[in-house]
Image 1: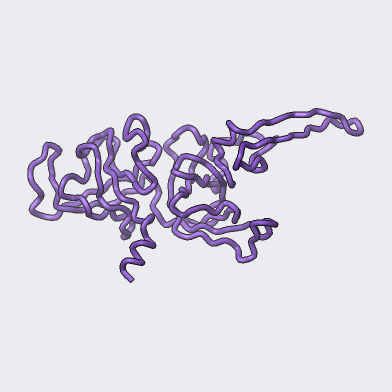
Image 2: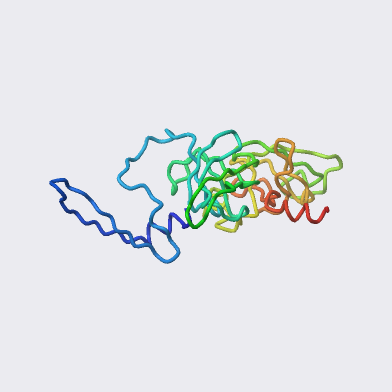
Length: 252
């Protein structure tokens, strides 16, 4: 899609006109979209499907919460979608296991794209070859990742650990981490959260700058948090995938 779904439902004016042609009742839909929105991109006359009956379907979102396009999983890491859905790589989230866009159900799995390939014959004017592949290599939420460091081993302070320690933590959904019960919108698209709902395990002072490793790849950098091992506030990490180009340019 080339617009924000949630904004569309507010800004779209729908006028229904019923008329008869050769004895058949037909419905004409005239849609007037708010500025910058495309009214063509929605399901008309369909039915609500059973939860999770289309497991291959993913939602492409901006800032992890605003849906703008759909896609299909064709392999573990590749998504098939329309070429006109291309947006900034750092602005997109791939969400599998979604059903309701407005409700967090616990089945959502979020990936960040690392590559977007539009078909070479795609034309933004004619929409010819409107097809694109997206590769996501970021672990889904809930997967255990490992953080290591020499930081404090107690929530009440103390001193850095003399020996290197590590702990495994699950990635926390962005929507949950940014909820009013947690960080209340202070988590940006350049951040990720990791920690247990019950708390008790976390990175802490002295661990800052260390890596959050998932499947042998550096996924995050220990950044900040509200105290340590707090059940309401998981640890916050810099999303390394968002800075790949900067890292490569700096190294080279």
